[in-house]
Length: 299
Image (tube, rainbow, N blue to C red):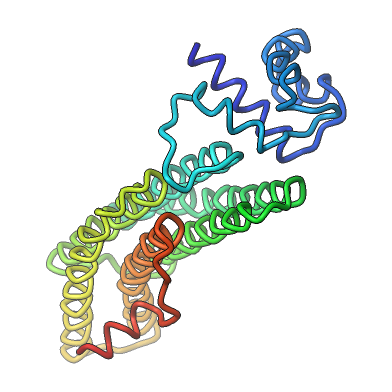
């Protein structure tokens, strides 16, 4: 049953994203037989959830959401299941890119760094796919409740920004010139673990309406900025004590500072995501002031 549901999700994703004209197009796109596509779509066609040629009636699709064993949140509506599934896949991929980037940093491994940078192309494509699917949802069903669908594009964009910041970590390996000393590496490892948890909990909060996770995200946010100050202080001390400040050393300190900033920005974006969840599910307005400026005003 789960395998069939997974295949049906893939079929519905093709309909939503690619607007196929025939079942043959769907079958060819997914490497399935036309007969199998017909079998899975037949119940939805009979109920008018899928209309020829081939369009999803997302209002009627809402009736079938239970087939995917998904818990319906308070602000869930038709079509959200398919786009949320894209976001789940996207955050998994972005986190793998993050892990690969930092692993290349720890091991000072050019090959791993290049693989992490290659993964960024997929992250960009996944963002574009979510954005395109959201546009399709709104164009097919321009009802007032679908205005909130735009939030999915915002979150996908946030994930793309996180992926972009992980590229600074991988780029250090390719441009940094020197390995990092153990003391500094320990601080950066703590920044990595903290910001990685922030991404995990903020997306968990958004996807599952677990808004109580905001408190945990904010605790980690405070920690990440304490670690940032410690890391930047270490860099300042090293620069002051460095007897040789040539071009290579300057590049090293510059790219290392970018790595520190990358962790900080990943944390800030995670706070933006959990704030978005509050607005999406509970209509809690998001502040227009970026988190980093709010924090400075309190210091």
